Image (cartoon, rainbow, N blue to C red):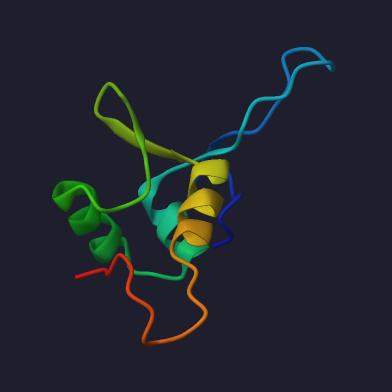
Length: 87
């Protein structure tokens, strides 16, 4: 299942052609996008060290731009470089 399939993507549409909305991904699609397990993403969300997310009612959603920023924030040039670690 691709991260943009109808069941995992919440929206990437334009109400009018001059306005675009960011893609919103459910946790399973966000995990696939980041190449991590959904369980890892769930635990990171509880710990507070995962990517930013939104809650709409009971639904957890991730913006694709936030996931990209999260990836960039964790870039390293060396394995000895100190930085944020995922537990």
